[in-house]
Amino acid sequence: MTREPNARLADLFGLAGWSKGELARLVNRQAAAMGHPQLATDTSRVRRWIETGETPRDPVPKVLAALFTERLGRVVTIEDLGFGRKGRAGKGQTHEGLPWAPERTAQVLTEFTGMDLMFNRRSLVGAGAALTAGSVLSSAMYDWLHTDPALASGAPYPSGVFTADHASFDRYEAAPVGSAEIEALENSVDIFRRWDASRGGGLQRKAVVGQLNEVGGMLAYRHPPHLQRRLWGVAANLAVLAGWMSHDVGLEPTAQKYFVIAAHAAREGGDRPRAGEALSRAARQMVHLGRPDDALDLMKLAQSGSGDEALPRTRAMLHTIEAWAQASMGRGQAMRRTLGEAEELFVSDKGDVPAPSWMQMFDEADLHGMQALAYRTLAEHEAKAAVLAQQHAKEALRLRKDGHERSQIFDHISLASACFIDDQPERGDKYARLALVTIGETSSHRTWDRLREMYRLTGQYASRTDIRILREEIAEALPQQNGVGLGPNAAV
Image (cartoon, rainbow, N blue to C red; front, side, top):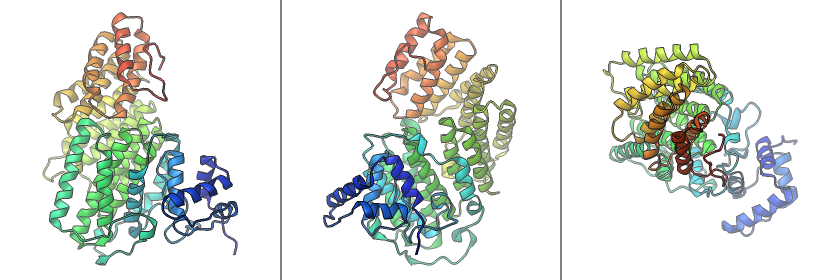
């Protein structure tokens, strides 16, 4: 019987740059270190994995996942290698097996978090290139997101223990949990969310990932529908946080995977608005990385997939992200129209329906903060937009509550950047220094990225003594990139 090549493994093998003989030796060495000294892989066997799609026996897929994870500087799961739980998927499978079948979501979640926790990122490389295009994710997940799973549709939902392949990844034995345990998990999400808003994602990221890993084990047990729905909600919220924290510290492919996991978890729990919001995070990530076209593809899916049950405030938030992407592309008219719709939706929300916990962070201050960011971004194409950027940034700062220090830094950077674009270097210097006061207290790479953008805008005023000193202070505050610091005279 003729088999097809394993295209996923072939692609990753090409990226890794190994020879087949080298990979065989590495597999044997890694397997011995993992307690399997009897394993004896050779070059011909590696060739069959790649060229004929042969699926190796356990523990080889897990060994390969660990090797590729370390080599490529991003989490690579068994499924990423083309080795599915029930054999490699055949023709017609969507990108990376998306969407996953309901029984696969908890498995993917647990395997990915387990790999993330064990991965030593001392040599992270090629992160941005590994991101899946927004159009690919949208086409793979569109039909799936627009249908309801069993928990939402009222279809029969079996009870008991879900049969999982424990040989392929580490997990404690699943056990049922009750409402008290789930309530404690929900409270822990709120704590993690507040910490992230205050200090950034670096310090608590692995704690969130570890908590999500344990929830994946809990999901292996079939609880009564009302408890299972809440548990999926916890998984979705933790996955979004893990993704956002990963994005915050520059682990971009890892972040995207968590956003996709969150969308799956939310949908399994019947919460389509939550699934849409998770995908909107992936869109924000794309804009930040300079890929606004991918962001717009994801926003179409996020908005349509959220369904009619999405509250006006949720839809307002989604509109602000779409507007930021439009601004990045210089589409001023479309951006203004989208922001106008966001304002109308925000004020139309009467608050008669309680907002879900994951929307608590999007308040009036955040609305103005996103408007400031959109206008500041558009100002790179239309300088006059800088005036409105300043107005919205000031209003965001006026409304900011305690505990949102990272957002305040972003507001100050938006305000300072808009001032530099608006040919007001004195005011730009003032607000830039306010950002510098607290930026060292966060672990957010995104704040550093925005600070680098602001540094670039100060270049035209570098002959001024005050701006020269400011540039020196910014360079001192920024960490080194690739072993090279940002000098005060660097042209960024």
